[in-house]
Length: 166
Image (cartoon, rainbow, N blue to C red; front, side, top):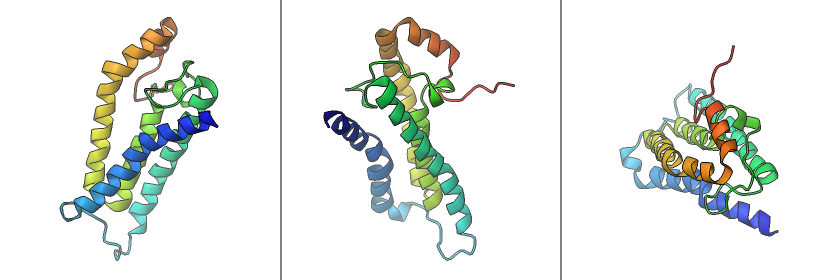
């Protein structure tokens, strides 16, 4: 029960804030400065379909990563309650930060669904903030916690964009 609470708290405080609260505030507080799709357009289903094609994989990727943190890492996504074991399986075999990629896909899907340049801008700011955080805080912390195993993983697996192997 306590473990479930820890995970729910981490999800509510971090991704929920990023993908629900901030977009809601942007859509409602700055509506006059934002763009939106005109729902009366005959082809409105096209950006909505494209948004679903981005948002749903983002949700699946995020959920997969959280489940790996629980089952293998024995920790949460929160920096104050990190994993106890290095997670290097599933999507973590291809990029070091697939959870952030999943959240970014959710934001991009939301921006496309709404036709909102503000949520699109927020997705860019989110990625930039996380890049800085990972380079200057998360990665040095992982090197301290996991030592050579993380350094080897870091040498083999790119941070954001998977390597194309032919």
